[in-house]
Length: 128
Image (tube, rainbow, N blue to C red):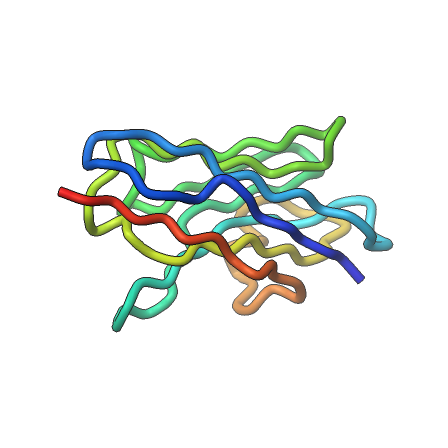
């Protein structure tokens, strides 16, 4: 069982920056697909960042490409989401997710629908 705890959400004005962190613990796999998805009011959930911990390969959704970056701190087993140039439409609850995957690449992570584990979420609010 993997436990995921998010932190770093908050309120910021448009154009500002926030960094979200997801600390992972537990789990039996040597590598995982990890990522962030968000869900705003009345909007379908959207996976915005994916990382495969075996090789740190990443994928960023087109909607946030060029503004968001994802990284994995192996020493702290923490997944970070660096969010810059935030827009009001980025307002959402952001969730960390994880799914065990022994071999493959981030492309394989993208083929997985619902991940096995997700955190409780952290709210990001961007005002205009």
